[in-house]
Length: 231
Image (cartoon, rainbow, N blue to C red; front, side):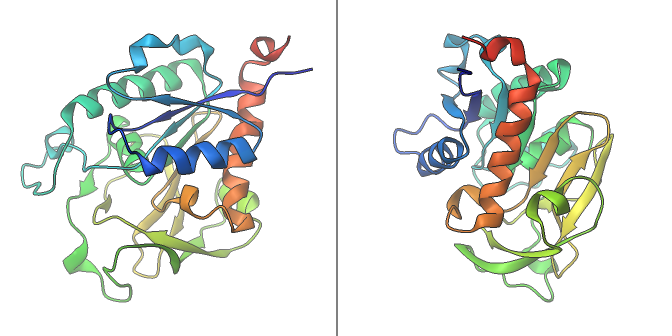
């Protein structure tokens, strides 16, 4: 019987990390085996054991990484460094990647893109209210895989961010946006599977469309290193 694919889930070193536990549940429900990776623990694990990777949400990315110097929110440079290493490893080895919120932004930065440091004054049709509940709307662009994964053109999303992707990184395309036309999802045209989403699907396991994201990641992870999944 095949072993469940190991999905690395990155995050901060905080003892109480709700994002980790939410992602743990979502990966388990999708048939994967979640493995927590943080700045202080990731060197304890062999990168080659991973079959897929989730880059999780959290603090702002150091604005110096994309040519800005006007960041005001807390940053975590140590986490930036370790997640950049993980993304580069996944790119080099063709591991499937799902970036969530900060994770989607960091994938974009690693690939040479940039961010809007603060979009709150730029919104016109959407609220700045932060909520884990699905109070906003994403609209698929009918490019890439995402529309097929979600099986609908529009879907409900939550919102816990104040930054957004500005210039796209190399090889990325926009596969969803919101009502203000801010980027809500990106995919790679050069890699087997990179999907970055600006919302937090791990907090929405009660929505079938959001569970499909994790099932798709786990499915792709099963194909990434099939020889590593045999008993």
